Length: 317
Image (cartoon, rainbow, N blue to C red):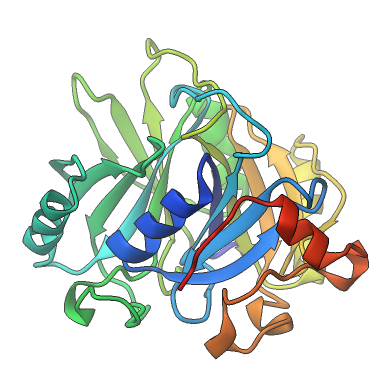
């Protein structure tokens, strides 16, 4: 059985890259790990990465800012990811609700399973939660969030499935275990899955069941995909073979420079990516230089200076 021990990263759409950068670094206190481009349209779209100090799989949130290719505002709903949970320590809820009030970030607080979840959105309306939980990830200490309250990687993703049985089948084919259920007459039922071995963080997926909810529409303020961890190319081949044996169609391997990826669209509507743990973000920069300049892969063969002139301005100082 191939090992898929956690979430690798998530990717979403935003509008203005500066607003996105300011929120994730100055409000949430994450590190700006990498500034690259969407490889199929490098002169129009950044690919921005946030995470912990090293961009460890399980901590990484990535965005495509669509300023130069206007995209309609999306609708978070059935058939897509509906939230990403970020891990905070027990005892940090008051710190974060106070911080959100200071930064004019609207939020709600909910008790779920054995955790407290502080729900909020990014500036474009993409849903997130701060979830109390355990993690061995150290928070990024380069911002003004105290270490004792800092975000320690992802906790989970929530999949608002249009075919819950199909979504759960894929997770079970992946070797993830059903570990709990939470029911709520208004918010819908949640079925919780967890990675078999676990990882330092990001080892949980909730399947949200709200059959009468509207269908989601991909656009600004929605997620594109969730990526799961596979160790290397050989293990990725094993995962692809396993999925195909169970009736799921996987793509060919895509070179994302910092990792290699394959994809499926699961029956509930979400896009699942299977991303290798390497080469990693030190491929083209030393850790102390992460995010300082635009990086593109050598194989893309483009003029970086020309691309920088065409992309929207982004001040990361």
